[in-house]
Image (cartoon, rainbow, N blue to C red; front, side, top):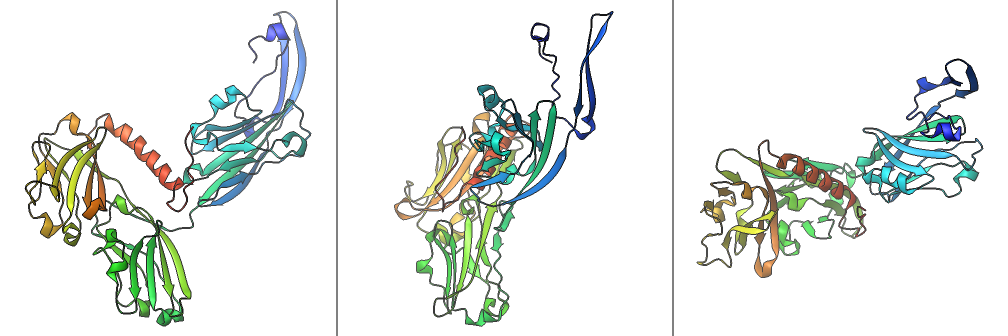
Length: 411
C-alpha cells in the first residue's frame, strides 16, 4: 500500500505477480478500533491466455503478441516480464527512469512497444535480435483501474542450421551433407566453403585441387570416396579446434554449373579447459605434421596479461630449437614428425592461471591454425568468473556471423 495513505486518502492495494488463484472479491475497510467503515469492494479477474511464438535463427526481431478490447485510459500500466526459466523485467509502459533501472540487462535497448497502444489496444512487444537465450515464457500484465488482465506468450527460438558440437581434442569431426536423389551421378563438382567465403574443400571430377584450398584447411579435409553412389557429401575435418568454429556451406554442381544441392551446417568445438592438479600441467594440441613445415609455433598467455611462453620454428635462434620465455616449459622434440604441440609447464603458480593460445603461423605471418586452452585452479575463485565469460562468449557466438557485420553492443 502507499506509505502516505493517511495523508492522501489513497488506500489502494498493489498485488504483484498475480496468479489465477488470486481471482475473487476484495473488500477494503477502515477502522479506528471502535467503528468499522467499508470503503469499497473490488472484483479481481486474472485471465491467463497462452500464445506460442516461433522465431527463426538470425531473425532481426520478433513480436510477442498481446491485445485487448478493453478501453485503456491514460493511467493504464503495462508490464512485460519473463517468468521462465527465470524471472526478470523485460519492458514497462509508460517508461520512466525507474523502469529502466528495473529492466534486465539482457533486454537493454532491445525492446519497444507501439506508441499508440492506448488507442489501439495492441500491447505487443517487439524484441530485437532474438537468440536462443530469449526462449521461455513471457507475461503481459495490464493494470487498468481495478481490472488486471494477463496474457502469457511462450517464445521458441528455432535453429534452422544444424549444429555439430564436439569435445576439444577429437581427432576429426564430420560435417553432415546428404543428398538422397537419383541425380547423384550427375554431380561433377562439390565445394565446401566457410562463412568467410574461404575454400575449405573442393572436388572437381577425379581430383582435389589443393592450390584452391585455403591454407588453413590443407591436409586436414577429405570427402568420402563413394559419395556419388551414396549421395553422402559429408566433409571430415581433422584435428578441429575453436579456430574452426564457423558456418560451413556445401554445394554440389552438375557439369553446366547448375546447383543440384546446397546445405549449411555450424561447427562448434567446445572450449578446452585444463584444471591444475599438482605442480605441473599439460596444454594439449594435436594437428597434422604437414601444417608445421616451414612454420612457427608459439604458445602465449593471452589473459589476464599477455606474455609469450614458448616458441619453436621460424624466427627462433638457433633455427629449429625451442625458445622458452618461462622456466620449466617445453614442447615435444619430435613435434614436426608427430604434430603433437602439447605444452608442459612445471612449477605452476597463481600467475600461470588464465587463457593460453597456441598459434601456428606460416610465411609472412599467415595464421594456419589456433587453439585456446583455459588453465584454471580446482575449486578456486576462477571457476565462477570463467563460467560467466563462457556464457558471454556463447551469447556472442549466437549473435555474430562473419557474413553479417551488424552486432548488438551491450549498453
